[in-house]
Image (cartoon, rainbow, N blue to C red; front, side, top):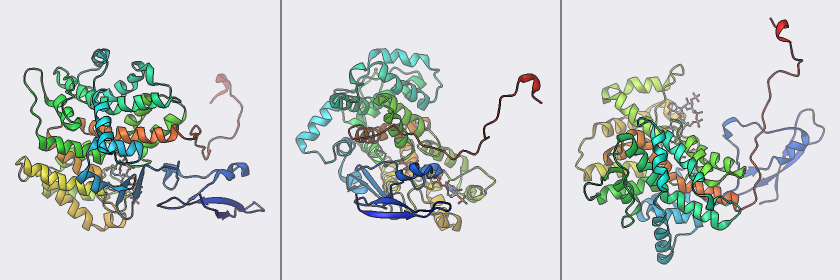
Length: 430
Ligand code: SDX
């Protein structure tokens, strides 16, 4: 923390208010506004556009420069040289693991991939056509009904066990939500496989024949998980922190994060991007949709464009775009029509003054759907994939908060409703 100060002059107040200013290692300074409460005043920042809700050491984003660091390591270097479970270790413990540490971490995750057999019957309560995200909200929240031995958030061992259980079981539950929707039998995890390979095995394997997961697809899937692993105080991570601040158990907190992620303005955008590209259907119709996106009277927005923080290319979108080219080429999918529409749409949007003035660039969701579709993931499962990848980020932030000093999150408001008035008996109302 620094000894810098901000001095606030408020009309109607005789004295100025001195507020401490803190500097981080990177990024903007923050003004501690705690002293305003004693002056019977609040800050007002709907959408938390310029509000730092916490101190964190996990992820740093420079939206102007398009920089994303996980514990100081650039996302493009991690995407090229690391893998998802190694990035999980980094996010959780703050350092890249040694070979021995990585081997122990990976084998521990592998020993938690199965779910309680009763959870299989839990699925039967859903309709077969339930959206997989609806199923995931329910099933992940229900984990706290199965794992009573890792709910004491004040116990570091419980926190560690819950973290391993969530990271290990999310792919199993995600694949189960897909299998349930298509009426196929659940596949048990195969712990001889890698994390992403095992997920694709559980998604597309069946008990009648051995699994044969393409290493190309497994690598692409692992990179998708890695690119979605964490993104500082985004809406779903802030939801997890707020739920955790009340002392709720980690499974309930992660279920809250899944629910927040589902929205089309957030993690639901990858599904919405594919639906948009399919609705556009042909490059000749792009101008019509770009016009709609610019029309204030039309609720349509270009899904996969824009970001609260990035006012430059989302570095994950760059990696995703390269991966899309690689995966489609390696799969021999030449001239994918949706990729052609996406690339043309990106080019038009980046030349259009409306998007340039508002610094609207492609975000992580713009290209991810094309890779997921090429891998064979159904569109309804796109946000579930995002949730699987982001689970480690949610847990890392939850653990950072719970293992430090924290208070229950309880925002205030600007009240513009009625002043006090007396009750009116029914017979006297107009
Ligand atoms: C994710 O926070 C994170 O880190 C999220 C995420 C993560 O990893 O956790 O990165 C993942 O959620 C990525 C974002 C995915 N969502 C979408 O692709 C949906 C489309 N994008 C928009 O809904 C929007 O850009 C948001 C929600 C992403 C950001 O919204 P903001 O910051 O509140 O910005 P805004 O709505 O105030 O927009 C500013 C201006 C407005 O125009 P004006 O009123 O100034 O004239 O830009 C316009 C908006 O109308 N605008 C768009 C647009 N996005 C913003 N216009 C057309 N198409 C768009 N996509």
